[in-house]
Amino acid sequence: MRIVADFHIHSKYAQATSPHCEPDRLSEGAKTKGINVLATGDFTHPEYFKELKQKLKKNEKDGLFPHNGVNFILSVEISCIYGIKTLKTKNIKHNTLRMHHVVLAPNFDVASQINDCLDKYGNLRSDGRPILGITSPVLVEQLMAISKDIFIIPAHIWTPWFGMLGSSSGVDAVEEAFEDQAKHIHALETGLSSDPAMNWMLSKLDKYTLVSNSDAHSIEKLGREANVFDLEELSYKSLINSIKTRKGFVKTYEFYPEEGKYHHDGHRQCNIRLHPNESKKYGNICPACRKPMTIGVLNRVYQLADRKYGHVPEQGIPFQHIVPLPTVISKALNKSETSLVVEQEHSKLIRYFGNEFAVHEANEEQLRLATSKEIAGALLKVAKGNIKWVPGYDGVFGDLVLDDSSRTLRESEEIKFSKSSKSKK
Image (cartoon, one colour):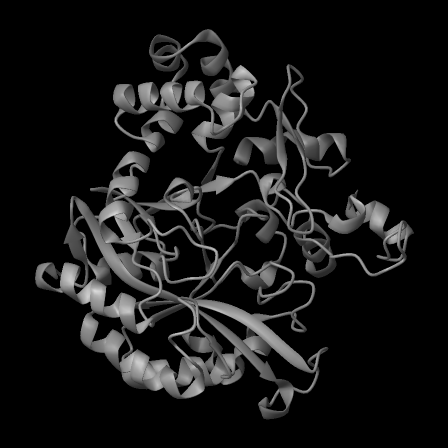
């Protein structure tokens, strides 16, 4: 049974999130994308928790909640902000740590206990992604005391400000972040600005399964990254077990990391975007205003890497780069993503293939039969990697450049890797 799962999204109760992010609209969006299992997001928010129970609880089956043709899984992203004085680790580089973690729960009873536990650490009503004064080790310890079936995934681990290994995190390893509770961490979320190939440059991450999720704040962003499984049966336990053991975990769908909004270094205020090699020349200081730049994901990976790009671990899960269909169509037609013609061409593709992921899996003949020469050509370039990017930096998403050249941006910027390593991808 082929399953596409997105374990990290947000609801209408989270800041800067669409009011359409509730179960009915989310399920419709998931079907358009081709998602079978979708996170609820934000179950710690009291109003949303009440809404989820009303719409989903009666249909509970094996830890999942079928609704309108989509299986929901209870999830929330927790923002932990805390001082280092309560930690055992001595080599933390900052006085305050900020980390985001995705939490998955097997049923409403356990989710309710989680809410009761976390309520004393902050205001669960203020945001769908609650900001709590609890350390990462204590968070894991208390959740494990509630149920060993709870699953914790450090979120977008390379994001500068709130990623566990981000440039401003203050820690360099899972063990530093979680101390004696690191034994309960089995998976890491790579985030939009990195892909598995970048994470494989760190041997110390080999023991963790790499997962990819959308972190969507709107219906349109669902499934921009996702996980693909082949399971004999679908349940909460079968999904978690597949993540832990990597058995039945087929691949992940990935952003090209250059599209992520923290891939390169830079300073948005000054319109300064720099590759790590260039940043080094300036001492990581903005050459325009002389203030510190935001150090991006690529730079941070370079700092911690002990392998060259192109290494594939023995148990590495395969991955496939994708670009959201509206982005590809808009670039092919030179029209805005929100234009009517892009919407119409997107709808045609969905009607022809059934969902967006089916489009990403289509071969050349199918694409040329389904759409115009320009759009089919653009989709094929994306699938083959024959594209370039103006990389994302300091909160600005990267910009796709359709080009006849076979060189990727990484090659043009002298991120060297062999042809043999490319073939492994």
